[in-house]
Image (cartoon, rainbow, N blue to C red; front, side, top):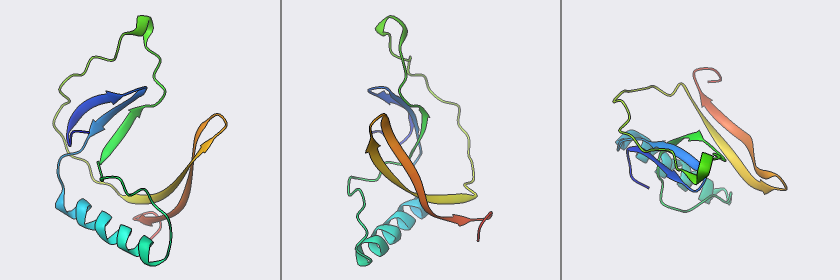
Length: 104
């Protein structure tokens, strides 16, 4: 997955996030803490992104045209640690912890 821009992977349409040293350092610390506690996690390369559309259905098998997204910034007020499990009808996401302005 590219680091910024937009793209699709199967039925998922996403927007990538530019390189961010603070975020990368946070993920490194989080993964180390999870490993120390024996909590399993996805060890794939970290690719920060925002999922825009999941399970997209394309009319006439056409893909969503990839365009250059507008440049902008956003501040994340909260970070949630999510558990994802494959369920009968797709993925099931459960928040198992969070930190941020809303919850300390």
